[in-house]
Image (tube, rainbow, N blue to C red; front, side, top):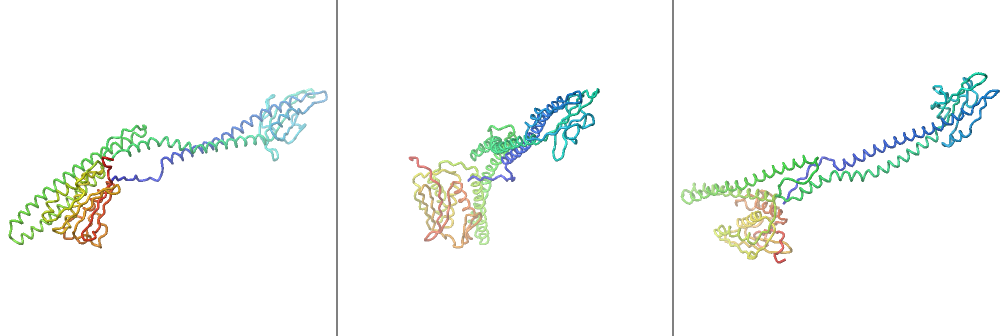
Amino acid sequence: MRRFLAARSTGFSLRGRLVWQFVALSLVLVVALFFAVRLAAERASRASQDAVLGAAVIAVADAIRPVDDGLAFDLPYAAFSMLGAMGNERIFYSLSIGPRHVSGYEDLPPPPVPAEALSPVFYSADYGVNRLRLASVTRRVLLEDSLREVTVVLGQTRYGQALIARDTARIAAWVGMGFLLLAVPMALLAARAVIGPVDLLAEAVTRRGPQDLRPVRHPAPRELLPLVGALNGFIARLRGALQMAETFIFEAAHRIRTPLSLVRTEAEIALAETSDEATRIRLRRMLRAIGESSRSASQILDHATVLYRSEQFEPEPVDLAALAAGVLRALEPVAEMREIAFVASGLDQPVRVQGDGRMLEVALRNILDNALKYSHDEGRIFVALRRQDGRTELTVEDEGRGLSPDDGDLSGRFRRGSNVGEIVGSGLGLTIIEEAATAHGGSFSLKPRAEKGACAILSLPSSPSPSA
């Protein structure tokens, strides 16, 4: 069974963060574009208005000419037509000779500085409720035998200029909104392009088998090289730790079982040679304690083996019939001592499954050992192997004490039935069988028989037959 540990979530998505940062940047750019276009439009419209206004005020000043009895002044309507082309504007003018007002609006705001020659002076000022853009030009004319300065001031409202600026800004706003709408898919594409190498690297690592602990050689951008290096370092440390764990398990199994077997043999010899009843009682207790320790150590090591091989699970074809027959032969000497007979069926023909032979052997040994341990002397144990509905089922039935009605699920670690207290056991046998079955995609069940005893069923997915 493969076990995956989910990484602890930090509460944010890197892809989402990239998208929102891109959208936020696009929004800032759109706002900046709106104000930049509006400012540029206002400057452009004011420049064009100043050009027309300057040409108009010069044209008005050129229309002033001296005559015998004073000055002649004709308003040039062409100039006013140019000003009217800017929009529905109001036009104001003022004509002064020195400090004396001659014509037009007397209270029109004067220029901040006097004009020189025919170069207009432009300025803005409030006149009543209107905001005006004004131009002033000064020229000298011969009047009453002397040169007199004539000042012309021409002003115009700015409604057309403001309208042009608003229209331009509105167009810029719509363009910005369109860009902002496009920013979301563009951000998604950009985030996908950035995160894509990470996804490809994760996919390459995920496709690896449980025993593939080679260094990662997948092409990666320079920014991901530290991550790949850290991952390869972790894989190297994991490979070393697994090798040490495997070595420890097999070494511990050898070093624990051998001394216990030797102590048990010496205790049995001592029991056979002594005639002192008190000594015999102590030796029997010693043998029971040694048996419990040996069995517990053996099953703890079997459990560790199953857990380790589950993490490194790599199935291969296994003949379950031959495997079960071999376990039966190994247990026959113990069964013969108690005159218990094995009745086997379906073990004479190969029955192949995809799995780990070592794990399946451990599971079969625990199933048959449980049946043998809890059977009565001179009883029978029925072992049947068959294919059914695409699955392979091994059924082991005994005629022993069976299950207590008060017992629930006994597949948990160190759980034992309430009616087996005087029999040596560790409570790990059913756990080992359950975990081995789960690693193979199968199941295990234990239920009472209709007559007496218990029925254990190990169900595994079947492999296609060679002739299929």
